[in-house]
Image 1 (cartoon, helix red, strand yellow):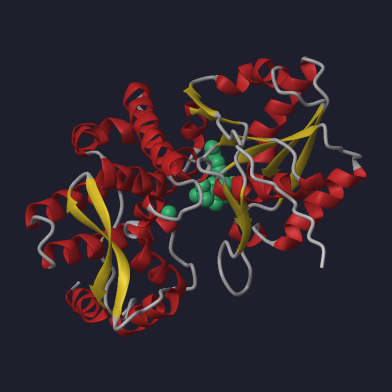
Image 2 (cartoon, protein in one colour):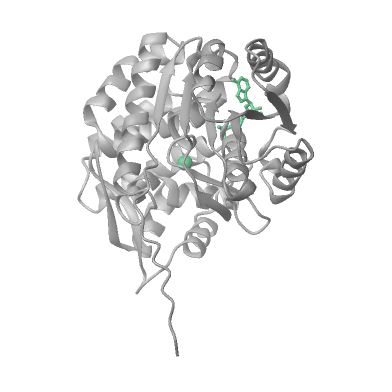
Length: 362
Ligand code: ADP
Ligand code: ZN
């Protein structure tokens, strides 16, 4: 027997910058001139195409940049293999080659979908994230998790594929609906809760300003939130260890989303999930009761719920979804808990019985 070894160990540099500011859409053309690509495809959804999409295309064309606009219907339903195929066919029809670059202009749906197209088109082409929702700015545009939903599970088909750059223009937030702003604040507050008590304190003091879209307060909050997420992703790009603390509030949050058939926003679901996770942390002797109250007060101020009535969310049904989602070993599961505000850890020893009690008590 002969053996041919294919030795493919390599050091990959996936580093990139996140740029945060105002009026960046206007200066994007200058940024793109630095990208080694000959053609650009702006991928966006039907709500954004007519406004920001058009504006971006016009400003790029003025600079003689070769650019195409590719649009799909807005909504989570579009985050599918079917839409991916449609976008790919359109790109092939336009004859876009390996020297093309994708610009993902939109919220999380656009970013995840366009990023996944970039990951597999011609075996991978560069892409730039231009998030337009707060959720995408502080969470989904950072870290390179891209993918689509299936009828069986959300985000089930995807890849880790890092963008070349993330450009966060705060001006986009002026047209965002209030509930979408709250949706993003849930993840932003989560970042403070798991990693930075000073940042949590800053949010307590400045949440009013942030809700009024005060530019300085927003910039500070978004920058710190991005730093925390980026810092965790840098330590654990493929979610083998510490990256799991980003799932604070998400075990029960996901159970709520699936038991309500996704008729609840992700931010609302994880805010409720964080309430249960904090209460569980307190019950198991890790977290102060006072900290649970501080967490929930801030969530409430940000326009987020921390509870749903029992007739809407049956504890037993929720528990089934938690069990379905998680590996249970001897009646115990992995669960992200807080030691204190700003200090999360993954426990591999939470009893299903304790979760049940917390869900029943609320
Ligand atoms: P996320 O997953 O980031 O919450 P989605 O991609 O689901 O975001 O977008 C939520 C909704 O907000 C979509 O209908 C989208 O078209 C719309 N949207 C995105 N950005 C803006 C914006 N800057 N202004 C107004 N609406 C926006
Ligand atoms: Zn989330």
